Length: 137
Image (cartoon, rainbow, N blue to C red):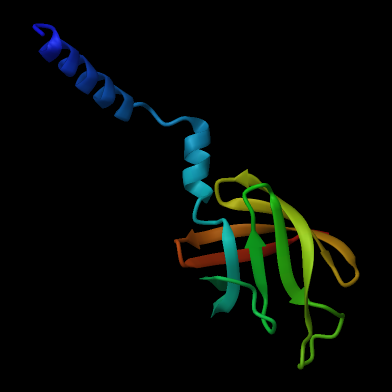
């Protein structure tokens, strides 16, 4: 029983040391993108920036994205070449990967085949995503 305070002190020290460990690169990546994963629907524009809001599901009649942890995505967008209302939307499957901490590369289907573009993350919070699209040809 004389060792009991020593053992208790050792356990408390071990717990304290474990809680003070340095984050790894994978921890930083998951913290950077943890708010990005999920469903986003178009909420409006601010100058040349698209504003998306978090949603439970994609809407039938507006643009949206589902961004998954595994690098897959679903983009809900115009289902045809004509952009004159009324616009019909469809879901297109694709993939995304990180280029930098604020730049994504997206490859996704559309009504005419497959396209690639970059998405710059302007700001990200749990309920709002502000992005800018960069198309290259």
